[in-house]
Image (cartoon, rainbow, N blue to C red; front, side):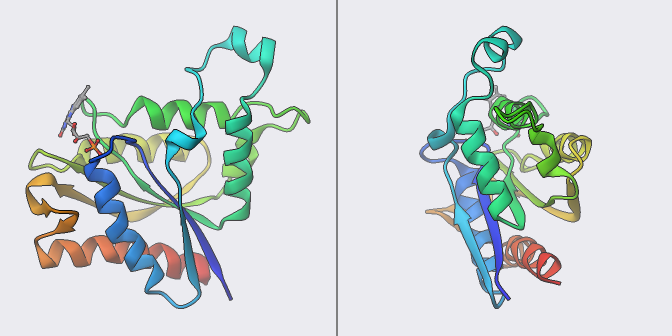
Length: 187
Ligand SMILES: Cc1cc2nc3c(=O)[nH]c(=O)nc-3n(C[C@H](O)[C@H](O)[C@H](O)COP(=O)(O)O)c2cc1C
C-alpha cells in the first residue's frame, strides 16, 4: 500500500534552515516501504494576507484551493516550522487560515483538516532550535482538527552544515519523525 505524504517548510527563504532539516525528515519518511513524499514550496502557493473584504469580493484564492486539493490527495503532512518571536510564521498561519474558509462550491475547507495526520520539526539558529514555535503550531493545528504526532524535534542551526545535520543522534531523531509519520499513517 502506498502512503502519500505532503511536506513543506514554513519558510520560503532560499537558505532556510527549516527547509534543510525537512529534507532529512523526508529521507526518514521515504525509508519506510511504500511511502512517497511530495515536497512543495509555499512560494508556489502564495496567498494575499487574509482580509474579510477581499474574501467577500473574490472568495478563496485559487492557490488555497489548489493546496487543499493536494491535502486531499495526501495522507499526512510533514511540517517544518520556523520560530518568529516564539511563534510560528505568519506564512504558515495565513496559508492555513485561507484554506479553512469557504470554497467556491460552498464547502468549508476546514473539513479537510479533521483528523489530518501531521508531524512537526523546527529549526532556528538558537540553541532551542525553534522549540517554542512547535508548541504554538501544535495548538493551532489542533484547533483545525489535525492529529499532531506527540513526537517532535527542534534542531539548532549550530548543528547544520551544508544541508546536513552534523550530530548523528539528532539526525536520526529527525529521520524518525518522518518515518514515524509514514508508519503511523500507513497502519
Ligand atoms: C521576526 C523574527 C523573529 C524571530 N524570532 C526568533 C525567536 O523567537 N527564536 C528563534 O530561535 N529565532 C528567531 N528568529 C530567527 C529565525 O529563527 C531565523 O531567521 C531562522 O533562520 C528562520 O528560519 P529559516 O532559516 O527556515 O528561514 C526570528 C527571526 C525573525 C525574522
